[in-house]
Image (tube, rainbow, N blue to C red; front, top):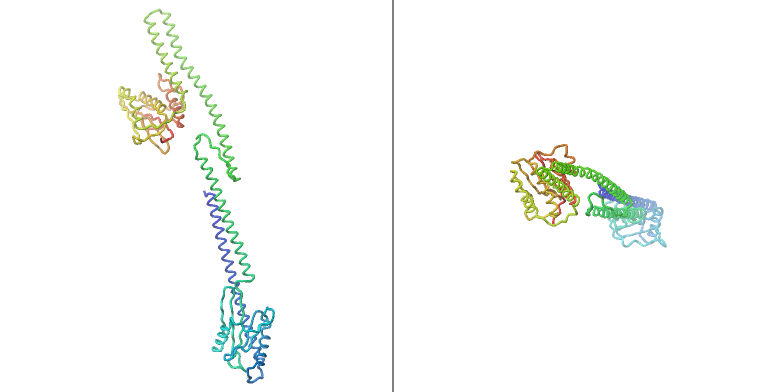
Length: 483
């Protein structure tokens, strides 16, 4: 599943590629347009040179040797003007190898008046191209590319009247100005603004979304009741805020339903507890009443003593029942403090060592944590929970068996296990094992495991029966809270 960030990044990359391709096409189009303008300029000077040559041949028709003087030069200027009158932007003249320029004209010059002076800046180029035409006896051309224009000078030999004479033409092809250049600049400007604008906009969108999503991640990462969803703040992004509102509404409904369910469970638990408590109290009271009535009726000292002893046993049973009940219902908030696991387990196990030895059981403690590793929990409550589990294990394990008390860390959880090699728990009561007054022993109150579960939940954990190949294993799963 791709993220929004990767999709926007892919969009930015495609936009950049598209912009680069478009810029390349624009530049290529401009270069082709420039080359076309140069080619057209070459055609102009070539045609202009032929026109001058043709006009010169018409001028000298029927003439024989002539002396170069001002009158002849003026006539040759007229020849050049006539030949180039219809060639816009083309200037030229007639050149003789020994005398230099004989005539020059620029009839389409767009200045304030006719241009009659030979261009000084290009004089060496004009001289060079005419010299090449004279030497080779064929037309010659020179191109001089510049930053904004290309200078094109063409020369072609002319025959008759004047020896070593050539006609020449010159023009400039604009390559960095004109409509094509302005179109290129406008296109590149629009393209640059589009690309950079889109890049900045996408960068801002990526940054804004990343920052807002990070805010939600921080909020979700803060400590909160695992049973409830944290209330997320609004981000300012309409789409995200719709999701935030949906999550907050779902969290509110979930919390409400959880409270309703908890209230219903408490009421149901109170009902079951009341019924079981009435049953557990009624039986000893009935037994005491029967013993007292028999003692009064018999008026026998021996039977009276026996009845009183039975009554005291039932009173002790009621006292144990009420004590366990008070422990279960008065489990307050745990008082957390650092506890070294290994010494804590050893001390807890040693309390029950004598009872285990009397039953012929092996009792040992194990942990995968160093002796100086400490974790925070309420040692009094956790020891009470382990005491109940260890006593249950000892009472349900036959002689020669083993009871193992373990502490281990799994990720961010502390696991406290009590495993025995007894007969295990019957499947009939597995689902109700942690409910009050559910016991596998006739003399038990059925509150020990309920107390263990309440202590685990007070620590934001849970108590459970886990699978083991043989015997029984109870596990207390608590959050790992290092000191």
